Length: 67
Image (cartoon, rainbow, N blue to C red):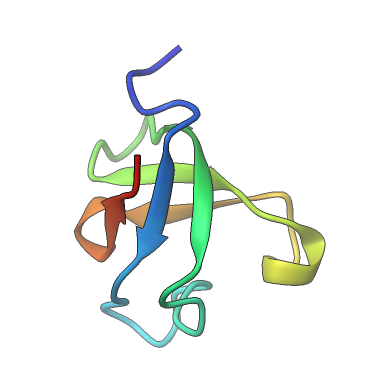
């Protein structure tokens, strides 16, 4: 379990149009874990309707913690 697990984040920016969350700015997601390959990214829970899959990564620079 990571210190980030279960925390809510809000997307505030996207540094690339190729990011799955490029059009999700302002939306909130629940953190599943910190990325094991790149500690600058968080793994978040999504829905199939939101992103097309159940999880996605978000750069820590592109989000803020809500709670």
